[in-house]
Image (cartoon, rainbow, N blue to C red):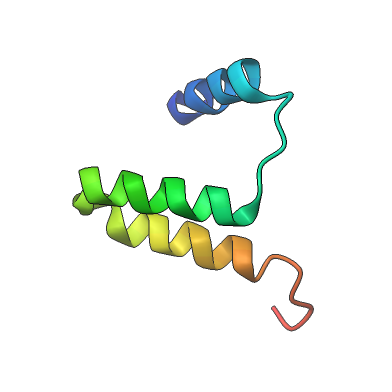
Length: 58
């Protein structure tokens, strides 16, 4: 297990039964970036990856 997997596992354990909208997720990402601007690049890449996940061209 990678170090980062611990956070993912905690997320699943604490909130795994919830259903959220993409709009809600986007707002939480914005909130996170307001508090942690040094993570702008990885969050931007993650959001772009999620947005294009189903694109057949890539």
